[in-house]
Image 1 (cartoon, rainbow, N blue to C red):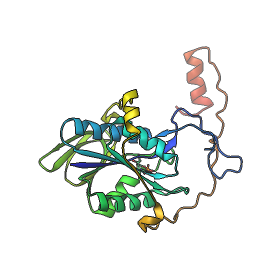
Image 2 (image 1 turned 60 degrees about the vertical axis):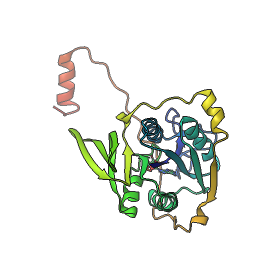
Image 3 (image 1 turned 90 degrees about the vertical axis):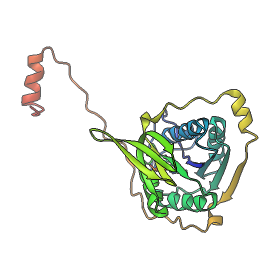
Image 4 (image 1 turned 90 degrees about the horizontal axis):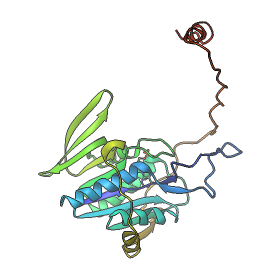
Length: 249
Ligand code: AMP
């Protein structure tokens, strides 16, 4: 079966994000960018399904600017077979991304679309669910285990207070949670090989999809600075402060 993996390029998880001076967003100029960590997990899962003989082809797709090519090359080095870059210099909201992915799905006809549960920049947690709704496919979100057999997939989901296993008919949408797997590192030979793997590019306009924003960001602000703490000398003093100053007990 063919698996489509959606990959977002985001500010690297180790970078301390800075809010722009005019409060319109966060600084992205000269900031290290990487593959969204949940998307790395999605690529890893697709590669494992291919190694098990379940998947036959992995197509990585990203919607973003020209630099997303780099991120797609990483996916190719990790084991994707080919990649598609849908180019735009604008920020596309989850609904727009889901519509673009739907259009790619209609062309590519995968049996499974793997996405991260969430992008760490927008923290939206929406794209997979919206894609599921647009396609009318079942979805297994927050996956911590994925098994495929007999035209169906069993997805174990991380839910409050435990695990839930759902069975979905293929084609289906799966979004990855943190504990699904530990992504591998790309080896040097695979990085070299990735340079020769096919990477198609198209403009968002070529797909005829309406990605006009529905959401306006009014303001982005830093969280209030934390007040300095105090050291207490004894448990009794701590209890006293919690009771009489913080009034939390
Ligand atoms: P979000 O709904 O923004 O939290 O993103 C959830 C997942 O949707 C990500 O982990 C990606 O798999 C996918 N996704 C979101 N934005 C993009 C994008 N611009 N290009 C490709 N995939 C995306």
